[in-house]
Length: 200
Image (cartoon, rainbow, N blue to C red):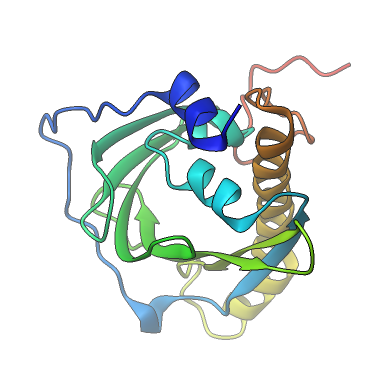
């Protein structure tokens, strides 16, 4: 099944109305921590991977910590959607740059709070292999010089790398298997998984 057809079979291409969603995000580059990136090689052509990550509502297919992915505007640089994590957190994603076939940049955060910046990029490698790189510049959580760095390197960095590894693994899984990822398929995450999850 072609990638785009498979995505639309699961996700559809219908965007939701915008019933009073809070759009007052506060991007602030100087208030972000140092960036981090995770790259995963996927055994598929770049256009196949792009068809998946550019489809409306795609997070419900590829994201192991996503409860729902409501779309308000799609696609392009004015795109806006919302992710509800299994932990209960709700974040809005506001797309700022959209490069067809290659990737996009966005701001993500809860309503009326500072945002983090995220970049998704695809790069075709030798043969039918595509590198997916997700880069993240987190918002500053603790605004105390010195302690801020300790929190970033000791807590935020490891937790977000763990998160990004699960997300990129989810994209890989869906592109190859054409079935949505399961909750916590690549491991439990203390911040984003359901707290009601029973551990065995």
